Image 1 (cartoon, rainbow, N blue to C red):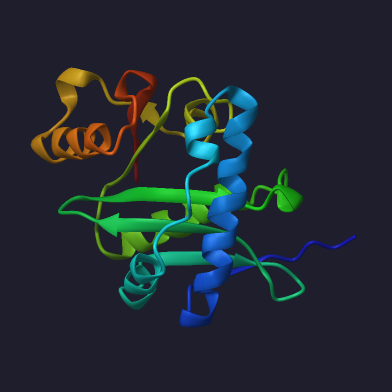
Image 2 (cartoon, rainbow, N blue to C red):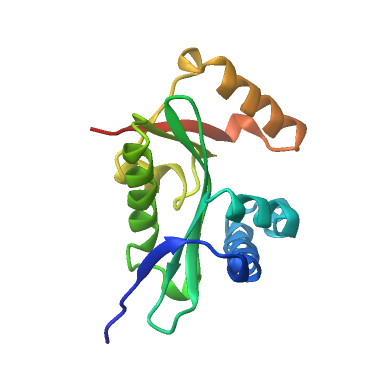
Length: 173
């Protein structure tokens, strides 16, 4: 069975699907004892609309023209910060997440940015271990710049346990 997936910048009509994908992806965290994340509501529609308008969301579209995953990102001075990467469970194992990261890397290179950066859970199998397989490396605490320290502080303010999280980077050739 052919699973042709295409990628494009999200359009306003994708907003509902993006929120649905995010919510479904969050459900997986119940299996690793993170009910707080599993129970969290999806992003606010206004935030999703703003990110779509800014061309900071890329969607993976399956052969039925349905959104199967997305990556949301934020360009920085020398890097792109990957804010969210989610793929529907029904589409897992097709390397859609890896391809979405590849799409963001293309955007970064086109803007002459040199790195992708993200923050994720250290021990959750589909988080840090997954990103390491995609070429990301852990950023040590001493390497965090002011922007990443501020982002970490914002995570703490949102109630995230930063002791279980790690910032990661992938250099772009």
